[in-house]
Image (tube, rainbow, N blue to C red; front, side, top):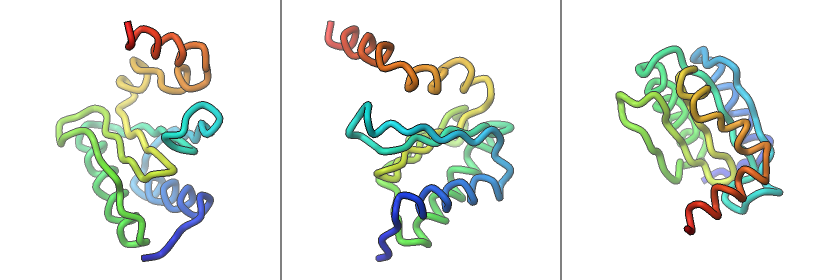
Length: 122
């Protein structure tokens, strides 16, 4: 099994998403906020079908490169699918889901994350 660097993993993910016409591909550095991952990639898909196609292609491309996904959440009719690749977590969303959940806003504000953690414990 091949070991990819973080930079190689990011390049593979972005190239794969771009090849299938994902839009607004954004990378967030989160290693200073959590131990779960080092980066989050968020992109837009044009439809629920496109969400599934992007997630399927990403899973196949990463497996072919020797990087097996640790998990995937979201079914064929989801407007949001998450692909966990260990150091990188990829969120593939319809524009409506991306606007509603505002992951960029959440992850860019450590105070918002802290507030959510406190609410979850209450």
